[in-house]
Length: 598
Ligand code: ATP
Ligand code: MG
Image (cartoon, rainbow, N blue to C red; front, top):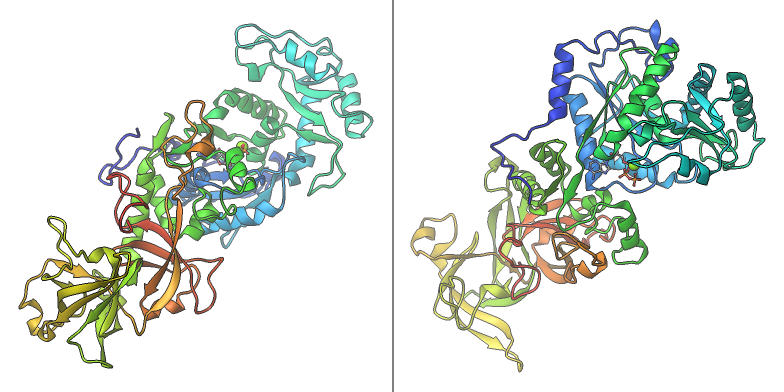
């Protein structure tokens, strides 16, 4: 599958190497910057740009961000951070039909959540490409005036036919040799709203025989009589994405315009366009450069907007922020750590070769971050009662548990202990399997942070299900006392005092799909949904967890990392989501189903 990337071998990032080389060569050192976007003239007399490089993250506000976007965000913002540059947050909202402002807020908060910012003491680099429409028109008008663009009046079908194919060159449009004056007049009338949608398009005049189809006179402006969420009805011509994007980069003084590989064939047009505009004096050199990297693909999830929409609309998940969704809102609700994403992106590196990253690598990164920082708490997910028959009735005591075994600075807490405690059902076996080291009649184990207990038996209901486990405790073996080590045991069990426990809903999330490549071959990806991707249990929690705030995350000892759900928790009544288990249980084939709780 993916090439093994270990923490010891820092992953390669070819774009980082390019930036380093560019900085060493002083390639961008002469750029001036007006402090805000604009055509070359506005930057020309401004001070030198104090940002060593400029990158941008340019989503279309037409959906929620997914794990793939996180790679682009970490790359663009990460390079700017590392090299004393700035990364712009730019909404690419030039397509009037597709955008929805509802997504803008969600994108902004997702990027912030990942730990990045576009605002500093000097600049606030949050932009909307639709604010650049007037400059884009100026650029288009210049191309017309310089003979680099013409109005084509062929129908869409005619244009498709005359464009040619990969093996066959295109043919010139009969309108290709219109005079500059005629093109100017027609483009003016297009803008004035005199023509219906599709009646004309403005095309760059490059080469209909180019082996690169993207250079066969690509369309740059089309007529669309629709309202735009930002500019309303001011325009009825809109730029094509491939025309708009390079100009947006140049207006913002971007140095490294980083995109995914599918735009590789567009790079010659990107360069052609910016070169023409620089020749015409509309842009200053050095011009932005486009670099392409391979997108993030992960096993067990889908990162296609279309398929994610289907999951939401057909209600296979509860919404975009369903904790099983590979969206950043979902990840946040699931309890994933933003630092875990940053670590993953650092580890997988950046290259041009297609890669499929094992989902367990993402989970490992999450665990690593969470293990380091999350406080420990105790929860019994599948409780069965344990009665300590020789512990005095009505008596109780408090024992100390550290909040983090490797971080004494995080302190410790007192947890109540008494005659009856909840233990995990799987920590008792009436007839033990070979090698079983926990409780069974005649065997001793430690109740962690408290005493060693000796199992004496159990009680069962009519169906043979164990309802109560009995044991006796060894009063001299309390943890932290000299007698603690006087008896050696192999099992170390977590527990919660019955009298003090707080019962709560805990959601055990697992992977949304049960196979590494959902929908591979001709299969419908919906057939690959994991039926066990969410299981809800009523767990018994140590009392302190009752006051967990939404979004607060803990390691539940032996179980993994859990977060108080941000949507369904009530004050004093948190619902917990399992973000990730303690160990990778997929490699060993253990999952949600089975005996205990994996
Ligand atoms: P679509 O084009 O279908 O609307 P998109 O995923 O390209 O979806 P954009 O909003 O255009 O969405 O993406 C913003 C940025 O995120 C782009 O620069 C894009 O290249 C990058 N990006 C999107 N998906 C991935 C991915 N899987 N891995 C890395 N980068 C990605
Ligand atoms: Mg896109």
